[in-house]
Length: 305
Image (cartoon, rainbow, N blue to C red; front, side, top):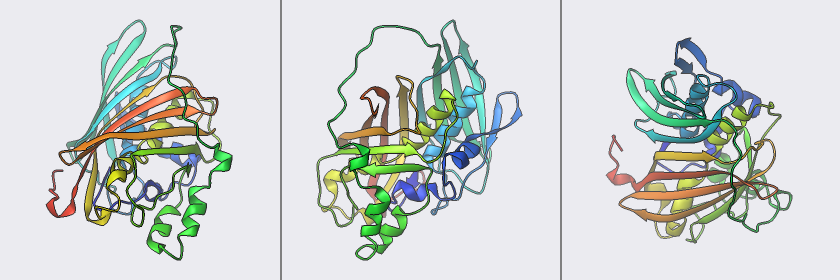
């Protein structure tokens, strides 16, 4: 994703109000062997949301893999900003089909040029040794104010932020630590966000993975900016996702609450690096995310990132 002034991810969800509409957006048209075409919803700033490309690319790859194999990892690079007025074509390369794993490479294309590429690996369910880190001790989602209610509290004091936070969305977010990034003071780069798809989801493991991939682009770059809030004016900053990697560890349902535990170990050379661990309500680690993104003063912005 690319944006010149920080806009909360709710702004990215304009025109997609629930999980049914999101799944329709991710359901690509097959136009030839290994070639698919996806539509865009209209973002406020006129560029394609990175989470949409992530999820659509994963969907395209999964259509070329036997149904008994599901994604266990994906690694993508954002190359160019996407034009929301032009459909995205996804070309899938079948790199390997082994006894347990299948590997695919996906290139997202607009106007004859790659805007995103991704490698994804799919695996059969197989037993093995297990361990995981502990889930953070945070309030349950029922005890956390919804982000929409928080937005309502800003209606008078910060109407611009209220408008952006209150836009329609297919995923509900409840942020444990509340920030509006304009009036807040700097803080340590840690956040905890409960999230859940709005509406019913089918009993299709791949669909849950794709919707989570879509939502995983939420709040990574903003977490990297937290130590600089109050000392750097975010309205002068330019942000752009550079790469995004995701691992699926266990089965989950995105229509039940998941905790997104985020941290940012480093920011340097105009780049912010963030990580996320995703837990279900029972404390099982179901997925992990890593992203690096551009963070620099808007006055030095270059058109090629």
